[in-house]
Length: 307
Ligand SMILES: NC(=O)c1ccc[n+]([C@@H]2O[C@H](COP(=O)([O-])OP(=O)(O)OC[C@H]3O[C@@H](n4cnc5c(N)ncnc54)[C@H](O)[C@@H]3O)[C@@H](O)[C@H]2O)c1
Image (cartoon, rainbow, N blue to C red):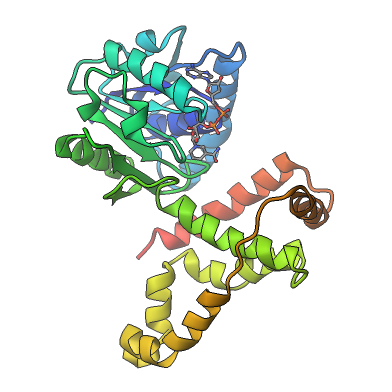
C-alpha cells in the first residue's frame, strides 16, 4: 500500500533510502539543512533508479517524481506514516532532531533512526513518545543491501518493533530484530571483529592490506554472500554438520580464537592501512570503485535473493 514516508537527513544514506522507498511505490518527503541537499538527493535517486529496475524492485506507479523536498523536518513529516531519520551520527544532534520529529508526528507514526551505533534509548530522551521510536539500521547502500537491523530501546513498544519489521519486509528488505541494545548493533560488531584481526595481521607484518582483503573477497566472502558463519561451519562439518564440526574442529578453532590480536588504531597503524588501501586501489578513484561495487552487487543480489 502506498504511503508517505518522511526522510530526515538526505545524505549518503537518506538519499539511498529515498530511492528504495520511491521504487516500492511510496511518496517520499525529505528534509536536509544542506544547501545542496535537494540537488544531491534528486541526483542520487536518478542514478540509483536503473539498478532498482534491474533488480525488479520498481513497482507499477512508482516514480522519482513522487519525491518532494521540504525546508523543515516538520514540513516533511506532515502526513507521513513512517519516518526514517538519517542525519549525522552525533548523539546530541540526533536528540534534537528526534525531539522535532516526535513533536511533528501523531503518536502512532513509527520513527526509525539509521544510526550505525547510537542507542535509541539515549536518542529519544527528549521525545514525548519514545515508545514509537526504533533503530532501523541499514547497510550502505540501503537501496541495494537487504539487511536492516531493528532495535528497540528501554521504552520502545513491541508494536513499534512489529510495525518497523513489517514495513521493511514489505520494502523487500531482510530485517532482523536485535533483542538488546548494544553499541554498534550486530553486523557492525561482526565487521569490527573481522577488521580488528585484519588490522592486527597487517600491523604484525603477517600480510599486506591487499592480501588481507583478497583472503576475504576470493575466499570466505563468496560463501558469506549466501550464508553466515554458523551455517558455513555447519556445512564444513560434512554430513555430521555442526555437531561433527564442534567435536572435530572446535578445539582447533578455539586455539585460533585465543590467538586473535587486539590492535589499537595508532597513527603508524592508521598510516599502514591508509597506504595499503591506496596501493590496493591502484589509481581507481572512489566514484569508480563505487560504480564497480554497485554493478557487481546487483549481480550478487540477483543470485543471493533467489531460492
Ligand atoms: N555511511 C554509511 O555507511 C552508513 C551506513 C548505515 C547507517 N549510517 C548512518 O546513517 C546516518 C547518516 O549517515 P550518512 O553516511 O548518510 O551521513 P552524511 O553526512 O552523508 O549525511 C548526513 C546528512 O544529514 C544532514 N544533516 C545535518 N544536520 C542535520 C539536521 N539537524 N537534521 C537533519 N539532517 C541533517 C546533512 O546535511 C547530510 O546531508 C548516520 O546516523 C550513520 O550512522 C551510515
